[in-house]
Length: 207
Image (spheres, rainbow, N blue to C red):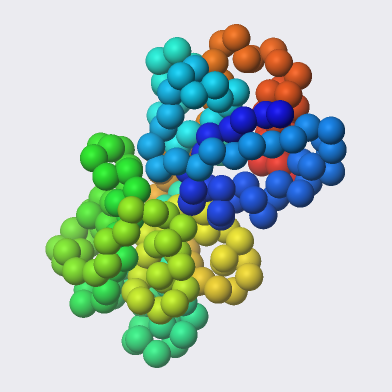
């Protein structure tokens, strides 16, 4: 049994849609997912590994970088068709923006204000709109047409591919200063169940 802690949003939007390939590669290895909004103490909870989003430094843990990501606005196709033109970031003025509070208080977590400033339109009012502390729910709100979400590329990839969401302003790039990492306690680093999971994750990212 391999126990892994992961955020509910990452589990729903990235890990679970791919996990069947892990079971196929390692049919003898059972997986237990502990989904938490807040990082858990791995040792205190007897957890082998975690997938975390951050700068890569967690005291007492070994971290392997999995994925970097971009952040960009997305909306439902119907909103794009019926809500007026969105050709330039300044066109967001007056639009309803959906805010991700899942890492509220983390100084490097991309916010609407940071994105708008980087895009050269800091004057756009970003105070209105729904506020949600779950990145998967943010995307669902956008899919349902409730506004424009500032999406994280790793989370939103499958929704864009399936046509549920549309990326806005694709020529403008904003790389998140944070990234996804697989972490473990030092004493778990060479356990076959952990190395199997870590190597599978790296293979998935590479593919």
